[in-house]
Amino acid sequence: MLKERYYSTVEFMDRFGKANREMAIYCEVGKKPTIGDFIEAFKKSGLDMELSDFANLTFKPRRPSEAPVLSLRVIRTMKDHTFKPFAC
Image (cartoon, helix red, strand yellow):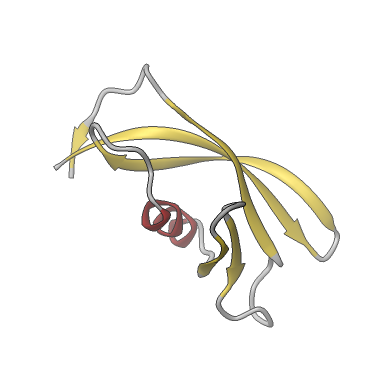
């Protein structure tokens, strides 16, 4: 299966405030990133998240007392046209 890369700007909210970070999201060629692709990217960065608000693409930690963040919100996602698809 070939994968291509998208870049997402994600708002990280923790106990000290908010910060925007860029994350790479990988999904199948010809498809746009799904909720599962975002959750997989969060897991790779060490965050166990679940979708809490579909309309705003907001994610909350599964175990809030153990998580370093309070919530994540996907602000925008853009395809990386310079990236060459690879096989997994």
